[in-house]
Length: 220
Ligand SMILES: Nc1ncnc2c1ncn2[C@@H]1O[C@H](COP(=O)(O)OP(=O)(O)O)[C@@H](O)[C@H]1O
Ligand SMILES: [Mg+2]
Image (tube, rainbow, N blue to C red; front, side):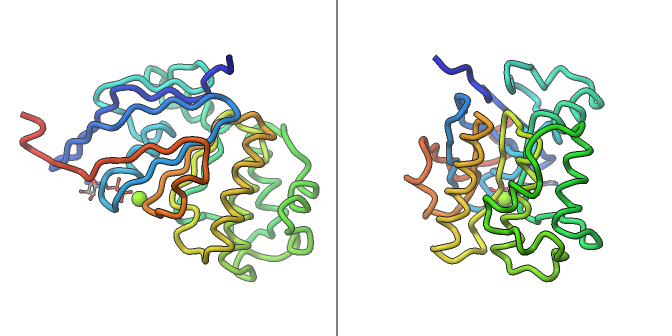
């Protein structure tokens, strides 16, 4: 049996006015999962918890067999850099750097391991954009660079927040297939978090995120 790249169980988190209890997630290496739910249901919050950017008030999060909840902040930052690839909703590409330089920087920060940037760009049909700046790309092309940056160091877990929401059907399908293909190549688990119903059925598994039932009462 494949080891699990991601286990998130009994996760709870509170903002001052909102208490979340999240569905359990377990994804084996090489498998993909969509977490689909309406806006405001806490999807981005859950992604930030799994990425170790927020700390849960309860629950267990293990990535590649490592408990990230009990790591120190600096251990978690280092772990994230080495073992996770994250495609955030806003892509956060460095606008002063070319596509190729954006990838080289990501690779350097992860310890100079992983794929060859030129080869990866060619796989994503972006070889001719290696020397372009992010502002010179279409939305779909920028999305593919953000994916390349997230997988260049061959992480164990790939997280994507609404990767298809600003894309037409053809590009949405393409982005999902690229994410799956790259995850398979790294033998990573892939978690796509989205309100986009088109994603349902396209990945190996789908978890429905309940609308957020709220709030102070839930805390009582
Ligand atoms: N930084 C924050 N401070 C306080 N409340 C927040 C914050 N971020 C999100 N929330 C609350 O959590 C809810 C869910 O947010 P989010 O995780 O972004 O949901 P989704 O990604 O599903 O749209 C928001 O509607 C808001 O009530
Ligand atoms: Mg969101």
